[in-house]
Amino acid sequence: MIVERTTHEVILRLPASVDVKELQDLINFARYKELVSGFKVSQSVVDEIADEISSSWWNNNMESLTK
Image (cartoon, rainbow, N blue to C red; front, side, top):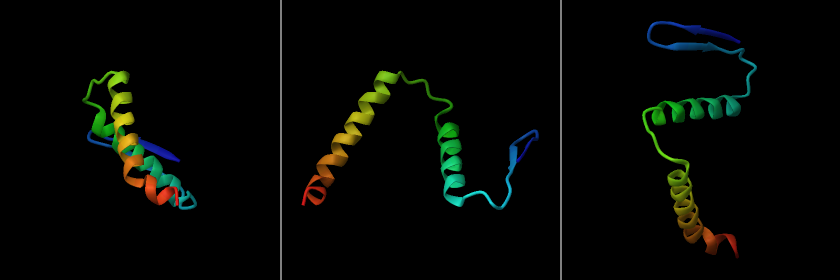
């Protein structure tokens, strides 16, 4: 693996043998970090939003999962 920093970006070179799904997970995490880098939110607010999302998801999917 080679990491190179230029003025405007960081370039990461990986061998072609790297698992594509794992690479996509890494890219998704990097994108997430980029998107939230400017936000300052407390953990309690994050937990509250996560609970709301989980509840909503469960309510929308409960019937199909409990058959």
